[in-house]
Image (tube, rainbow, N blue to C red; front, side, top):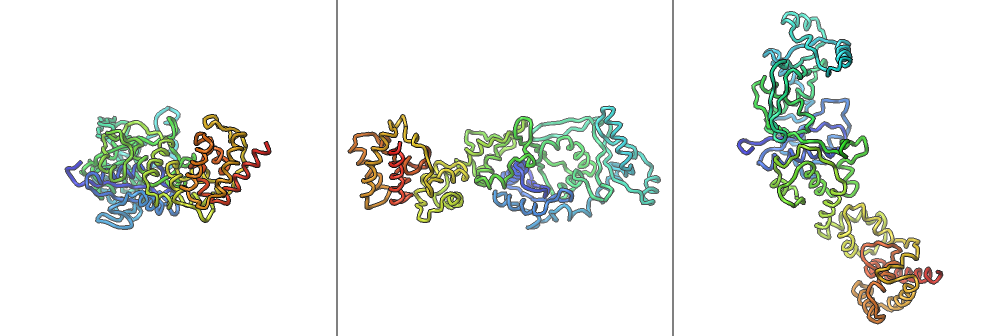
Length: 486
């Protein structure tokens, strides 16, 4: 790969959100370009106007920028082989198709829709795969000219060989040989003069100097026809890297239509951009060592095509969550607070909140930022809880012992003039020593009383500091009343 200047392209269609499989293709395309000090190109393939979604191009730009996949050439920044939007390149395709006709590698086809539908019905009834039967393949030059002159509608089809085999090499799947007899004479130029995706792709890749084509393995079956086009023009065939799909499970592909997450959805669910990219890299690619946490710069160094699997990758939400958690724990406190604050404010409106302390408590316990609201929903309002929470076998506490302990805690905290975490911790340590019990015997009832929950970020003393003196004392009094009423 290092022998010549590597040029790769990511060529999405603006049809909606950025799907996980699509983003993975962009990532691999970017990594290969950057690993070999090459050029990463963004090309927008917008010729299928029926599927065009307003605003989708901006989503593509936004997603690539957020994930750090910055392109070297593209529609918005230009470059030496523009334009980089396919609909702006339409004038050139018919010229190339007509060149193939002249060379005998393509032909005009005048078959109408009705004839083709009838042909496919007959083929389906006979169990034969749908394929053009070559009806117009050998029309004389004179007949073709006469029909063109008469204004008959036509398409231009590729003239594929009908005998022998075509072999091509893929970096992931190795050498693949197909019988030419199974190749369909695909349409290159449609009746409206527009190029088909398969033809435009080849012409665009060549004229943009693309050296490495990274795409889904659903295009493996089309590759022999692409190569025949390259050979017919006398163009150099690019290096192919076909990747297996990303699956929801063993039988189903990921699909936005079926409610599977797009990149935007994952970010909205509280995942970090860098963590999503890290995880997506591992969907079908295995690094050489044990480490699986990589920054984008590290991925550039580590990535190697030999690590790409031939098998489909299963999207594992649990693994994504674990990787995101690793990224959350590596954040600076300042960055964590900045990212976490909108989620904190979803359930906690308290103004004089010690964000530094709260961040210390939440950061080790947060895998995804959407975990946060539920963890701290007791700060603003004490939930109505069952006194069974006070019973903890390991702490050797129950309703009766907890009532006695809370009655001991209340005056200690009432008399505390310095309401800081150190001061509260020292006061509780002194009480533990005075009572001659283990820490949990005192701290568990305090935790339940001030939170009303079994699981909290931090223990009773941290929660007391967060709540403030007045609210802490009020909640302990509520606990005493609940237990006294038992």
